Length: 471
Ligand code: UD1
Ligand code: CA
Image 1 (cartoon, rainbow, N blue to C red):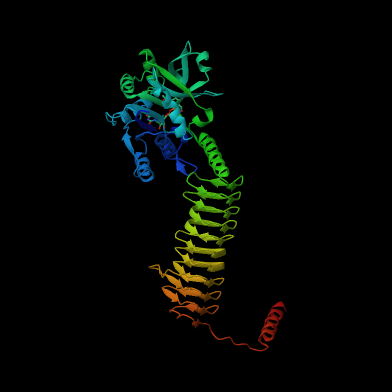
Image 2 (image 1 turned 135 degrees about the vertical axis):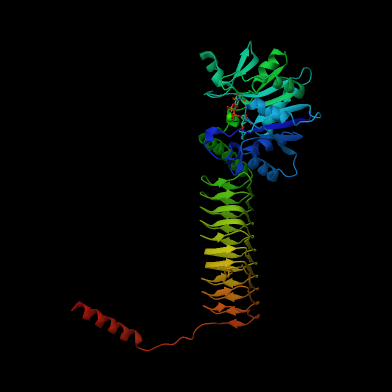
């Protein structure tokens, strides 16, 4: 197949979205709409992808530079949004002589895959008399709003936009233009140079390249694709529908690969699920989250960029961000792992425990309500209920180090920076302000005193006071 350069049209504001955010930056399953078109063009084998940006361009550019770093993706700017034809011109103007054919696609059809695009490229590679222009079509029940494919004696002669239709017969045409075109570059250049804005929207229509090619006697191929993949996003309702379809696709893929994903779980496009993991309902997996073999993420958990190790169990309603959970570790219910948490193999982090930038070694445990910020916790250490790492002195954050095998009694505070040595023991209710040597006991509490009979005397005094008031 000839080298193809992709042009993704993404300069429009997307007025119908009623948003300050440019349309192509609205996320679908965690990735902005524009991501899918660019990825599909790369998957289809485009040697280079040019994204035409305009409205909110800095946001789009910044995203593309980050998401496609090192890939042949760049932008072209369309200063004024004068229509899809003008956008295609802006893209084409930046393409060098090497390119032989061009794929132009609307940036708002995220369900289209690389395979679909390759199907549209095929007619230009046919032996004998290849097509000079191919475009994707589909049959829809309700063609309202779409450009109609008009044919004469079966041959495509024109795409006419909804608002430019001239008769009820034209309006009844259910074969619509999907906004994906592959053309020989010379033909595209010539066709685009002839566009005029003599139409209902006063815009330069990319779709007019079809009538031009037809009049020039070029062979045009209309490639039918399934209607569900060609759904465009123009408003929030369509955004919702397309996301539903995309999500079904993602879940089906992981189920086929052996993961159990219950209905009602949400799995973003960048997530990876290994065989025999279980994702319960109400779970939200975002970003680059990865759940390894035999791990379970139970009801209602929200994980963003989290690695869950093999056989680990994340119990209901736990929230974790930018963290890793070791193999066979246990988390939750109701645990909060903030960025930079690293739980070792078989570590336990129980209910109402919050961590931040904290590492827990193999088999270390913190089973009940605790705040463990900026901590380094060694293998097998045990952190009692109510423990607080006092990591912030109002100016700076400091580290608490608990060495292997140490035991921190309940309701202790560790005033960082501080270290508790290996196998040391911190007695319940201790405020640790200086380092504890290995194997030592640290205790800082007021000695208990019992006053015999004091409680009864106190009650008698209270009662007398109450009676006096009642008189
Ligand atoms: C377009 C087609 C229509 C087709 C439909 C399929 C035209 C004239 N019409 O209509 O035949 O049925 O897609 O979904 O092409 N854009 C720019 N610059 C502009 C205008 C648009 O970059 O000046 C970009 C938009 O960001 C968008 C894409 O082009 O990603 C399509 O534009 P949109 O306005 O959504 O076209 P439709 O009205 O959907
Ligand atoms: Ca559209």
